[in-house]
Image (cartoon, rainbow, N blue to C red; front, side):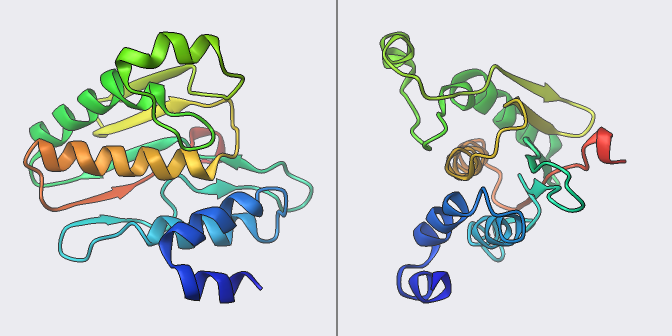
Length: 173
């Protein structure tokens, strides 16, 4: 059923299917990986299929999501500047439904919503990565918007080729 919908509608439908399967441990990681991979631009900014991946779900383990995006690029300084801009100005204002609230509307929006957004967004300069404290929540639509923001900020900073991936969480080795 999902395969037919994805064939007809492409990347946007992949993200909707990833969202629809978050409570299905045997399918969640698969559909998330396909959705993430659909954001790759061959010869430009590519995305590892495990970036922002859904982990766990086997042997009774709970599902969790890896909320880190690392950038591998020949231009470390520009990549780091792009991640810093994304962290300070945009990523904190992305909600679980994938909606990004403009900074000038954020205060009013925060007061009027029950939607989840990251508690904290930080930069790790040693790995050229950004991480979001999302309390292990599984939120594919938020992940979609975050990937697109990082790609957008990389382009604005002049980074044309890069590879986005998620470092393995420390708790998983």
